[in-house]
Length: 246
Image 1 (cartoon, rainbow, N blue to C red):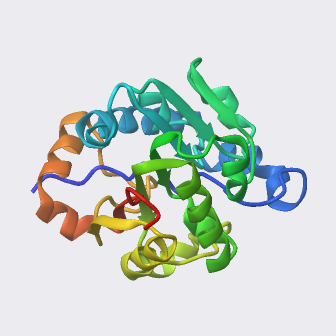
Image 2 (tube, rainbow, N blue to C red):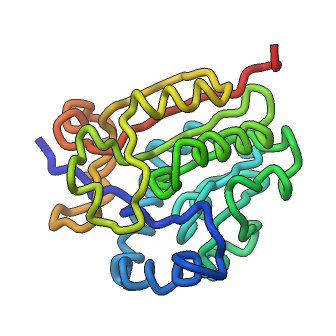
């Protein structure tokens, strides 16, 4: 069996908090140290393959796409959409965004105050929700996302699964909210979404690995589900906003 690709993120987005105090005031330093330039370049190439080989299935050229906790814009820079929006408190997000990507620096609970209601076709959240301070904060963020999504709009979540990651979840000191795929599914249902797909195991957990991430190997991993069952430690959850509030 081919070796698995390294996962795209190691907790590289902080979603909620004051950007001027506490951890919020140190995001650029934190992630610059966690992802030195060679690692960021590798991660960018990996996301280019992931988007082309897998995540592009969720995006149409005419869509408005929202990257929730965009980090270094590895996802949003590589999708083909009419309008692309990146949200993150990290000031480096703006510096790494493609020229036509709109960057908003704000708390994720406040998404609906800067983005028009029912204007987004797809919201994507990769390695974001483990940074939230509580289940209440998660619910508030999910409800804010639901507000800006169009009816039948989708939310795609890539998230460390504490069931499979175990104690390694705490290797990043800004991880605060451990979730399994069942807990994440329950949260999106409470927020009013309908579940469309739940994978307990999808991508490996960390980029801090010696495993190669050649494009052909990443593509093979995405096709060979048994490889994901063996090595995947991040969940994939796809949910949809109902057609009407009823």
